[in-house]
Length: 200
Ligand code: GDP
Image (cartoon, rainbow, N blue to C red):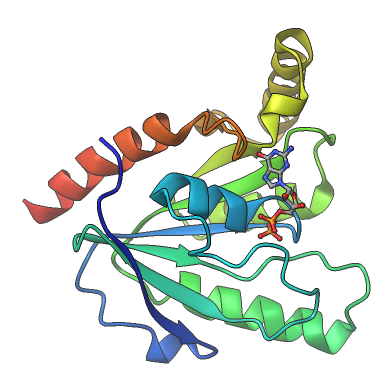
């Protein structure tokens, strides 16, 4: 079932000012340019809900969207800009950390990784930190229409093997493409039962 309604709600630079945690919430994060805005637009069926390819170093905001009047989709700032200063990086870490640790309604974090590049330390470290905090996450592979089926499978196998060096179990994987809309139904079908469970 596609998303019927998707509306921008609010942007914040202070996690404490985020909306009241009154609906289930799902956050999307990844390295800059991973395809996060494109994925959000694809999931919601809106061509420009999230802004595609904002300039690196633009104000880093936590963006809340309301989906089907039922759940929050949160667009978190992209990490890993090569050219940012240590101070900027620390500010980013504090913002994300403040957000992640202050949302009791945060049911899952979607960590996006570019399927065309090998596992990156920055992503693995980010996931490790989520694990340390006991925060549930899944991995979303983006831009997968660029890979043939054999290469895609090899990429997933490599990633799983890499994760199993640290984790007992690998998190769930979603294979997506903003170009073909691959993965949309899978992600929405993952979210819906969690929303139902949350309401009970
Ligand atoms: P963000 O910085 O993570 O929000 O990434 P964007 O959504 O702005 O995408 C970064 C670049 O990757 C843009 O040039 C997009 O057109 C491209 N892109 C995003 N998703 C896909 C995809 O599924 N397939 C392909 N081939 N390119 C994509």
